[in-house]
Length: 112
Image (cartoon, rainbow, N blue to C red):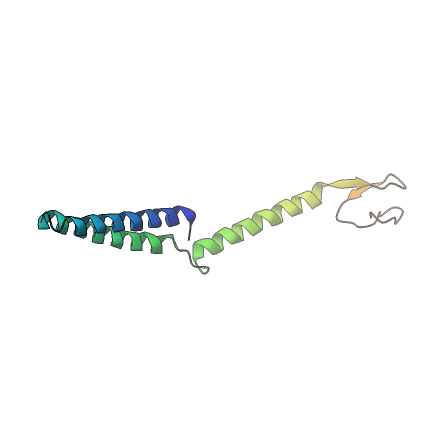
């Protein structure tokens, strides 16, 4: 559950409990006010349940899978672009070559 939705859920549940308690306390003073407060507490309770389930994301949610796929594609593009255009110079012969090669194509010296 997203922390934003978790915070809203906890705030609504807490507020619903306070309103419910206030409704129970005012029961002796006025039954109309008490019934209104208990009704409001019920509405807040239902709202908090809706927010709770709205904030949950399934691991099989298509939006989550799409975001993961886009992130992996971006990382692959960055890696490919970096490996296509980066060159290194051989310390032995001075030949410039692509970083995709692990050895110098001119003299055969290893990069590491």
